[in-house]
Length: 265
Image (tube, rainbow, N blue to C red; front, side):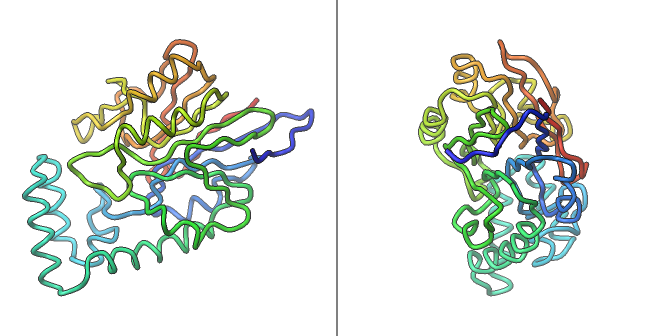
């Protein structure tokens, strides 16, 4: 287990999630903190608030981005996939290679903005295979693992569960539960997706329930961490609520707020 020395002074940690390309604010997100924690979703594939931003409009233009958002918002996922397939066929590019190169450009800027030390895990739109190329010596990547910061034990579980959106890092419920089990008892449980609680998984703007984890909720009840920190749901019905002995906190949509959530002890 890696550790950060803790003296008698107080420890301050800043936490971000759903960065989605916001390298400018990420560069100052650790100011005044002993460590930065990032709960994933660094990549910006498509900004639902501004359809001109992201990998998709860079490749296909804003008008086509408008259309894909319309289809996805209406939950017409098969039509959205067919529409995308026609767009890719029209430009004659290898889809996987083009996306991977676009993601690499974003990762180069974003990882360079991380302060030292940073502890990070993957979001559902991230590409874990690329992270070793960009994570410098000051960035520790954790998934199904623990680290000690300021005398408290933090556990990290990255990724999301499978959905019709088919984002890059979606895994089975069984694989996700195994990572939760591997983390065990911790003071602070850090994940990208929330526990499966209706108030925490419902997005009030998208007007739909995102996927949360039942295994995560069960672990919270069983191991009783002080905090469960997560992101993923950009506009949740509840940003913070108590589940048993645990304070469950959605740390916020950093892409739009540019502000980290602060934990101090």
